[in-house]
Image (cartoon, rainbow, N blue to C red; front, side, top):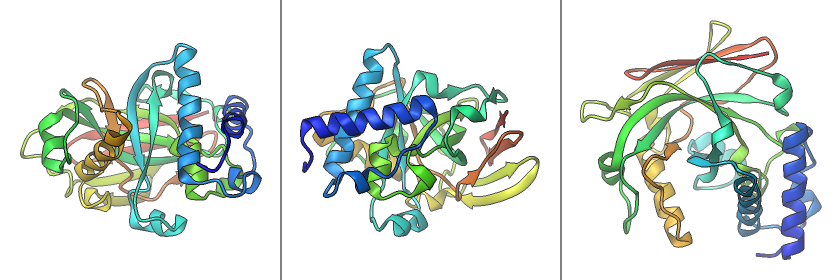
Length: 262
């Protein structure tokens, strides 16, 4: 770490206030020169601890930066991760105020619901499938509390990997005949096709993203627990949404979820 504890708390305060007011701040990396990824995760953990202390519940995890184009954009060669809290879960078909967000975008993903903890040395995609009870189509709302999405890796990591909300479809038991790497995702806005992609865009297979997360969390003494779910990363590019938009995500074999921004 290059930042002192006081600066870690100060940066966490800035992001927490930006989130509460839906008023983005300038990139942290411009304010805190020399900030590194270790600092960024410390900032993320500070806000997680604050929110858990306020009564919110950790229900899942997210993996981001799983596509080659996004990694190239930020100049990195591996994903990042964040957390999902209970108040970030949105009901399928629900209406959500645009004022809740700074600059929201949507992405189609697969969520993995665990029946067993994920731990091992290392965890493989096979282990992920064995530990998974069910999967679901999901629509993640990503948002940047950093102004104008002017992100570096450190900025997005500190900002909870730019996570904001999640819409989950029905859980579908994960059986051997479900091919997540070959699954096709379609992202629609207001009934019109916005983008499409395959599960193989997510590190070759969405299960690989979950394995990466388990292996990354292990040295931190953190397991992914039964009953928690993992958002494994987007099949497509993220699309901006505004008030009045209806966004939907469809993944072959898993169904469709939607959200209305009001």
